[in-house]
Image (cartoon, rainbow, N blue to C red):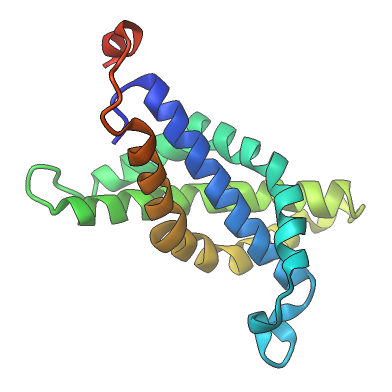
Length: 177
């Protein structure tokens, strides 16, 4: 969808923010124990959304940084092994690229979260990092994939199209194509 570097940055910022916020809502709800209560996540309160906003306010920067350093690049390379751009349906291509990117980004962000929240902030021993990382990845991967495919991805594309709808390009943006 993005046609210029500038548009790619804007798209990346929107996607990073929507992914970080959704995953923070999920992780904070789990941390508060809503998944173990009778009624489960249906018992969530608005406090979850506020707490998630606080954590997502800085976690999106990690998402943006890591996705631009390797997540998107490796995800696209993996997807290229599966898709045939000249023959496959554009929807299928989008799903495969999104899934392959989550396949790279979820372990990356799970490791980041394990280090930040468990080792640095909760003072867990470094020797426990492999187990903490594995547990974090097992917990987050299904949600990250579903959130990306059914919420963050479509919302990001909708917002991106709204921002760049019929927008005249500047000479600088035209030269970046």
